[in-house]
Image 1 (cartoon, rainbow, N blue to C red):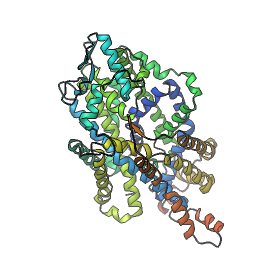
Image 2 (cartoon, rainbow, N blue to C red; image 1 turned 90 degrees about the vertical axis):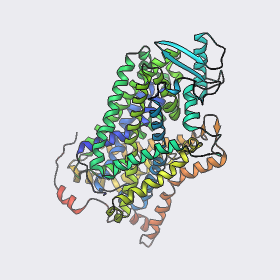
Image 3 (tube, rainbow, N blue to C red; image 1 turned 180 degrees about the vertical axis):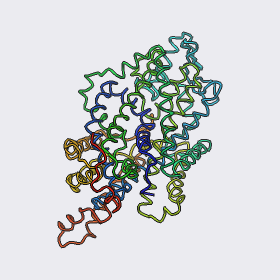
Image 4 (cartoon, rainbow, N blue to C red; image 1 turned 90 degrees about the horizontal axis):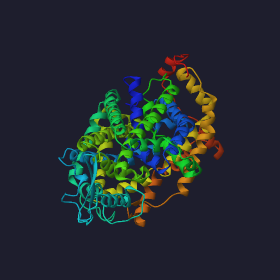
Amino acid sequence: MGHETWGSHVDYIVTILGYSVGVGGMWKFPYLCMRNGGGAFLLLFLVFSVIGAIPCVFLEMVIGQFSQSGPVKVWNLCPPFRGIGLGYVLITMYFSTYYPALFAWFFYYLYYSFSAKIPWAHCDNVWNTPSCISHIDVDGVADANVTNASLTDSNAATAMYNNSLLANGTGNWSSVVSGMTAAEEFWRFRVLEISDGLEHLGEVRWPLFGCLVIAYVMAFLFIFQGIKVSGKVVYITVGIPYILLTVFLIQGCLLPGSADGIYYFVYPKFEKLLDPKIWIEACNYALYSLGIAWGCLITMASHNKFNNNCFRDVLIIVAADVATAVFVGFAFFAIMGHVAYLRGVTVEAFQSSGFNLGFIVYPEAVASLPVPQLWSALTFITLLLLGIDSLIPCFEISITALTDQFPRLARRRWLPYIMVLLPSLFMGLLYMSRGGIYMLTLVDWYAFFPSMAVFAMMECFVVTWCYGTNRLEKDIKMMWGKTVPKAMIISLKYICPILFLVIFSYSLYSYRPPKYGDYVFPAWATGLGWTISFSSLVPLPVIFFWTVYRTEGKTLKEKVMKALEPNKHWGPSTFEKENCNGEATETMM
């Protein structure tokens, strides 16, 4: 299984592109742009994609392709650091337990998108409260419907709506009135039936669990046939979102106010560049968007042909990832510019974090468009397809790591898939409970902090300093007959580790306890979060000391130096070496 190859090279490129874009590109990138001055963040994102993302993506592709193995076995290049690979797997396991919950919610919204009147656009539903506030654009005229309110003037009602929108987690203004928007009440009281907190998880929301089962069945069907089949499926799951985003962009540009949204996106506020936080977040997202230190790039590259030119692939994938982020930005800000125009507020007023952006602001935005049912359905179909592109590789990471360690499992093809998917599905029951959003927020808050920065820094250090750049360059030359530019080696050896160290240090400095809306997590929940956070880091020192301890040698120094050498399982098969000996079939760009 670990040596199965792609049906075609394009399958590999499209799969990596779909993974890098994912749902995060639809809400994390727009949110960070809004929060950090639009064009200022975009400018820094482009810079860090070049100086940080390209070298790190290249490194992971090279070691994955050369070893033809998964995220744990690849560290046979320096055995004491196999804990890095195990940490990758734990991170993706956490991610793949809660990420399908988003699918369940997307399916739920998609179902309601076909209603005669989409329920998050008005306050006439059984779950709405007396203080519910709705705002619907009818025939181009902003009309406010405020339940149990004495306001009769349309402008006053609109002002009340906007203030409520911004006061309840979908914006950044201070609270002016009590009450929630119809979209927020749909999210909280219909979709989640939210409880009071993590202390009261409550019963499982069985309609949502049914949607979750559909997500897992889809995942199983996509990956069970292997990458030769799943590599073809991505043409649909990646292609359709691009088509739909193009439709969104064209529709958005035809609406009044769209130019203001696009202007906010592309015009950099240079005074924002004086804030170090923007630099850190731009660098962090440039690395996050490509899945660095997750193990996915290593796993996907391990299925390449041995003589594939990774350098060419890196340039294509990073360029496509950046172009897609910019494309999403244009489509998103065109629509948000129109919504801001209708409500008489600025685009900056819609600052909102991940879950609120996906399940409150997006539904609010499509409710303001002509034929909202159509745009709502297209929005959630897009999010579902992009989610599949991110989720499938995460399951592949765990499955590849499992079959690398226990090759006999690969004889029963269905068994490793069940061993990975079934426990994840049962874990999903937690997120489908009435208090599941609190658990999901907690896991999302701590699963990647600060381990991703640590693993990314360590992989650069281990490969360039312990394994050595001379060996790395020889491996590259063996694969496609050329070495890499010295700038790439310098970046991997010095620049990238420093960038990751800065991100790690800033993450600790800027740490704050998790919150969901006004709910503050109790101390025991924070302790659980830190346990999740450090659980992926624990294998790193444990495996290091255990490997050194078991290595033969008279002194500690001798044992350490011997342990740091690649073991006999590192590298390609004898067939691959003979097949590529002396070949130089690719030309470096």
